[in-house]
Length: 399
Image (cartoon, rainbow, N blue to C red; front, side):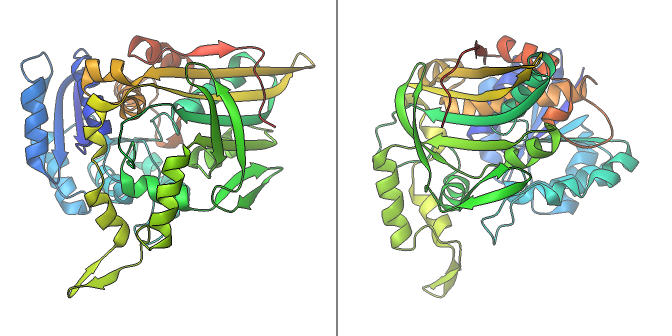
């Protein structure tokens, strides 16, 4: 059907690329582009020989001119951005300059501030509309599938949704004293930031890890989970009309929290540059360099993830509750694509989003979040491509 340029070659990109190659009727050609071309070449060699034709290139995604030249040379139908969130705007600018559709999994975050929100990308709405191209934001799992779950619940199960709790549990064990399951820099910035949730039309801010709940996750068991700020809260608050409260919880083990607090106390999670032997370095970026690469965790990670949404609302004048979730097995993911489940649950929806934009199912000019489209095609694709969803019509609620 067409061509896709994939920018980035980390753990999530590896899964998305595997899935593109499993879907050659849509992805006839792909180009893998990254700052480190050798990583792209190694993956292309591993996956080459199938129906999908694979190209590779070196690119610094911070530079719009380089991105424009790459896009003009390859002429893709869509750019799938799986690089760092800091690079979202430069890649969007390049897509505007070349009138190429855009898909990403995480919203923009300034390098110098641990703050992520959609306003920078939403500001591109009119420019993308006038250019006649589509930007699909947040096509991962959370954000991504959680937004699709919300749109599906709104379409099929509720007249109005009043409360949404998004629960992200990782019951996996990689055997390291401390490691992160996705980009350490992004993960630690997210976890150490202040928490927040949406309630009655405004944000309620909390201290990091201030609010804790226990929940019994199917396939995992009871886990402590903590309230965080997460980007889909912002878009769902605007797009799920009438919602009164939206919260996001993520599970963390005590060992992870203890190590993280020690690192924070000694300044290793700081994003303020320091002078070291005459060079400016950012402590968190140095910490990222010494921690295990998340892409290397696949062969040693066992256990499962459970990610989903609990909805409370009204149907036919009566109160209703509904829980949509996915359970993913780390070792099953590794056997299929050589990755642990955290990368898998993000990489699969990234491929699906790019597919729906390429085939025109989710394609309209402007900048959109996933819940602004018909959820049914995405929900159908989830099971087909490895992330079957489950339902509970009488779930235990989070207090």
